[in-house]
Length: 355
Image (tube, rainbow, N blue to C red; front, side):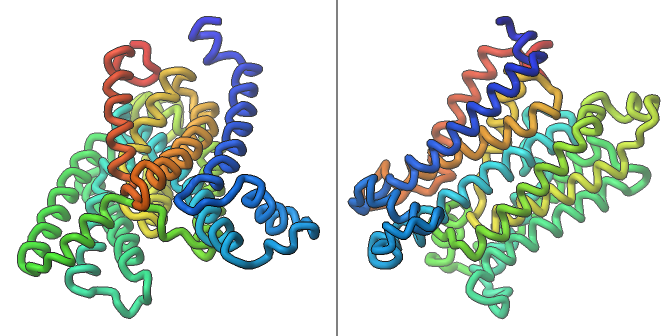
């Protein structure tokens, strides 16, 4: 079957989605068994059998060290990996449609720099300490949202926001946030704080907890379903403002709404796992090369592929160094950058992979 038929074939699309769902379930089961603690596969599944399925025969695993490792440490990480992978992938898809750039990712509009500035304020100067033990993540979340609103405000000065104005506003605010972050780090002269900021900015799922999982996962799923239902508008964004207005659709309001929703998703991801880049760039672009630019297919496939990718990336970050853990941001960049370069060399640049 040629590339065009793969893109346009509904049975093929359904088969791919079902296959990815099976792979996702398998990835979850494999990932939970991996880690530095030596626990057999049967014991892992018995804990999950009791906690998830309520199998009474496994009630002996309702507590104890094995229960804690599997249910309190590993499984929340897998759930968070699914939420983060889905969030960043879909945010990348939407951002690329908003700015009409297939190489854009969720951080091109300065959202990453805003989160970094918020975290730097919290770690180096103690801002937001009254917000509780997770105040660093909360400040990063606030920083991401404030920069998003700032981008919208700047882009709407002297006329409605366009994709070009959004990119320029994002680049400007990103430079401002980075400058302030570096200034704070310089004047604080706190080596411990600098190490904390650096490690936090590299991203990690080690802080996964059920309390945060049950918040971020439903929100991300609802956001993905929302964007899936708006695939026609996202397709129009690729055509540009002039064409969409000719077709009777003004993209000004949807562009604002979509940017705010993606900013919330990214802010929650930053809150739960720090700054993890590249996922929103490589996943949508790779999926688009195979299945085309139709967001009706692109969104669900990207969400599933992003979740699977993040699960295995987190599992590898836990086992690649014995008795230690590599920040997932480093690992993703090491793996993702060569893959992306390969895709760029093998395929033509642009939406859909065929120009």
